[in-house]
Image 1 (cartoon, rainbow, N blue to C red):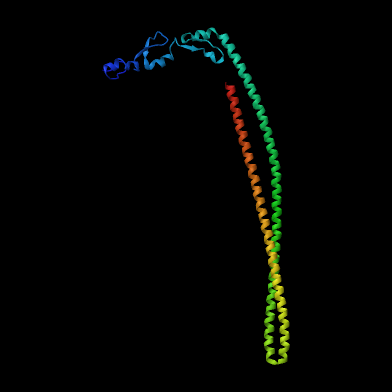
Image 2 (cartoon, helix red, strand yellow; image 1 turned 120 degrees about the vertical axis):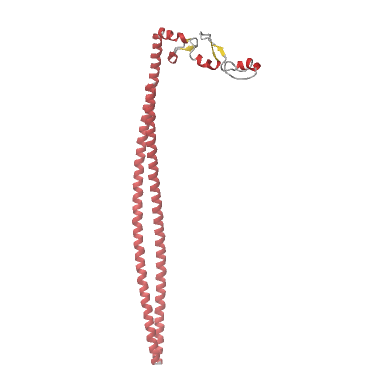
Length: 280
């Protein structure tokens, strides 16, 4: 069979017993026993929102009126309690105004605190700028010292080149003496003896020149190595100063960005709070 209220089909026994207890179209009596009488079960919640006999709160409950009346009597209650409702409203507004004033005072104090924090940050920024300028000067001094070291290395290289020219000239002289020795050997034994003596003398001179040349080269290498270490130290100090300078500048940048974000955020929150309170 088919249910006469919702058109659901089933056995007669089920339709007439269990189904009726949950049928959405089954007519049920209003809980408030209003003149509407019976309504469909699925529409009972909608009906209760409009039922004239439903018990409801006074519209002025939000300002302190604790009266409850039938829905159809609500307007009579409102019209008959105008003075009392106005008193409730004024009292509530006064309380809200007091709360708002306290909140505004708190916001003013917070604003003053933010201003002080901003000034402190500006002061710290000023000190950091002094440190940055000091670091810049240190960097410039390091660069100047580096230039001096480079000039000293250039001078040493020039001295080394001069020494090489002297050594080359001595080698050419020895070669010339060798040729003269060959010529003397052709002439006589006496000349050979004199030549040997001269050769021994020139050999000693050559050994002395070579010894002096090696000593000069050793000293020159040691001086170049020392200058290289000094140059590496200057470069390392210069890199460290640049790193500290970049770090200090980046830190100040982050502090300024954070301060700006906090200031904008606070101003937005303050405006929102004030607008909300004024609206309420």
